[in-house]
Length: 86
Image (cartoon, rainbow, N blue to C red):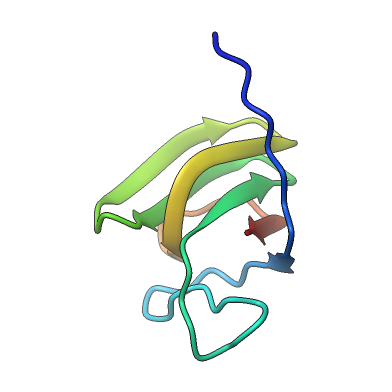
């Protein structure tokens, strides 16, 4: 497996929503794709930057997800303590 260093400049707690994208922490009117950190673990349903609706099943607690996302859906997400990282 390749090693990839993840550097984060901004972080914000995610409120899962079926209708609202994750607002960028520096400008609430902008949507920038971000990677996620799952604090508790569980399933996470997202909209990717490319427009794919995907559910990641069984994400372990303490995991960074190296997928650019714009939304975390309330429906289909059981994980909590999710953080958006830019």
